[in-house]
Image (cartoon, rainbow, N blue to C red; front, side, top):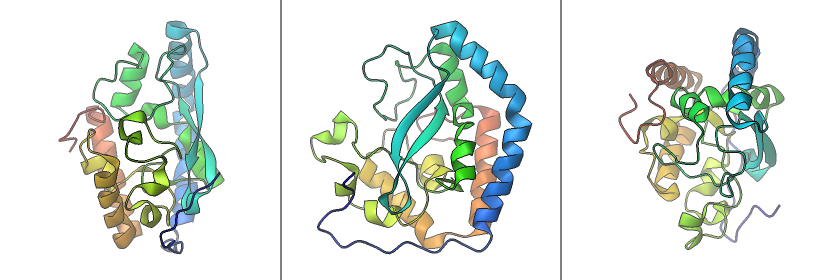
Length: 215
């Protein structure tokens, strides 16, 4: 996969001390504690749409290295545009079960496996595919052409982050990447803890699909 441009490439940022150990431990505990939910969600997804339980898609990781992200499937199995990554409130492509999972970010549970493998972190920029959706395809052929991409690619993508929490869902990628730049510049374990706690608060209130004002 070509994941570079003629612009200057930034070196990978060193992770804060204990970040990897923190991610691994929390993901391992999360998988154990959430295991009963996997059965419930899997059954609900299959009964509604009779399609695959899990969703796999190639995303750009740290240093532009591709990896396969794993999630619970939330969109209709036979939808032609289900692979597009578009942030909209009340996405009409979602199933009823999928909408409920997205409200609490429960569709992200399988991504704990990505964290265990080291593809992702709990906190970081949102993992995006190399080819972006058609809405911005008029301006950009791929993610590497968006201003701010190379800075955000210095760190692992995450389940949550500054952009995921604070940026409006309908904001363009370039503007969201400015939020990601804040995280890259200020990355620390304490910031990770704060963002994780805020994310849990949003999950408990089921506000992940709100256009803005999640917290």
